[in-house]
Image (cartoon, rainbow, N blue to C red; front, side):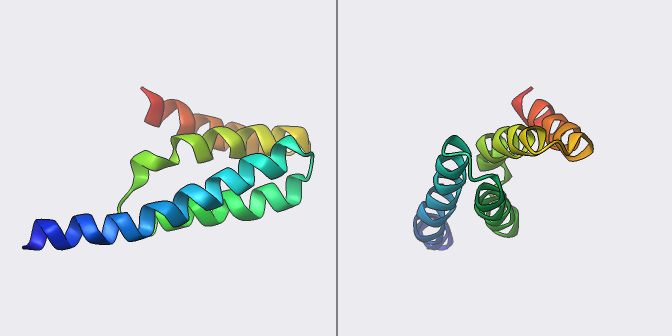
Length: 88
């Protein structure tokens, strides 16, 4: 029963994380970097808060790319390191 409840909860949360992450990527591709950061950070936080850190690979990549585009290289390197650590 506990496993079933956990899967049901993940099924409720995952779409929210997925949507926020994809909105962030879409805003990035549209050149709206501040909006991209808003949604990417929300997706990242939701994944962490719900024990779904493995879903952050996509978020880390786009956070790094977005910070690079706006010239914030310290943040870009920080998120790229997170991306590399999770990818490996």
